[in-house]
Length: 332
Image 1 (cartoon, rainbow, N blue to C red):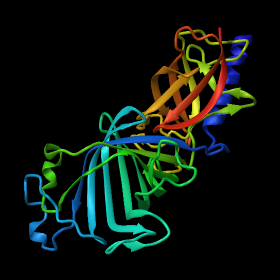
Image 2 (tube, one colour; image 1 turned 30 degrees about the vertical axis):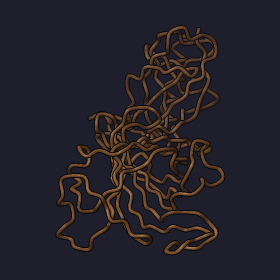
Image 3 (cartoon, rainbow, N blue to C red; image 1 turned 120 degrees about the horizontal axis):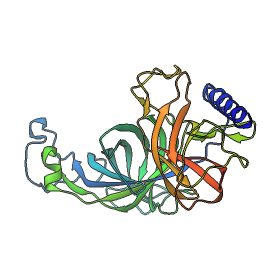
């Protein structure tokens, strides 16, 4: 009878939690380190459109001293050390701003070399779209106050995003690396063959909504998969056991649903962003991350407790490389 009551309580808590539209939360920032390779800057060194993208080989550009425009393209290869795909694009205009400006430079109180619009369109390593982050600002010079410690240059404001990054804000800049300069006459179809260097960027991202493990009546909504009863001090998990937890803020699913609409029971709506779970800092095997049927912004994540886990275990979820909330559960 006691275990039956626990199971009823668990189902009631989890259903009530996942049928809510969201929970109040502190939107703590996450740092995304994005690595980009084959980064090539195409200088606008001719005004003749008939010559654009016509030369198959590397071209030495004719670079204007100031106010010249250019566009850069690069391949995203990892986010926070995890393999990823995608494209970085950069649209910029040279500025050469300097307090001790020489001929052809621009005098000012700061040191910057251009004004730039960046986009990071990120895919999973399997090519599934995750979302895009958009930023604007001056390039070169020192990083602004409050930047990630790894950032060494640039002063970009993150002004928004799409997909899993809808509504993000923050700032970003360069860590290390460079790009290859070429002429706008070079054919970008050969960019990877002609190659370019690798550059790393640090993005301090404040999401519109964090991934969050639901807590109701003081209980984290983490259940035993076997009988749907809550994991508690009196009903602990065991190492290697498969558990389910109920969360919010995992973002878009595949197939998708219209914003504000509940997830269907069929077909199952699977989170299309990378979803990771850690237990006491160790990676746990994630078996499923789906939209909970009937819920709006409510998800069920099934995961396995790592072996050798004992006592109070700290469980934390990450979605689209954005770190979410953590809760403690009991493991016998």
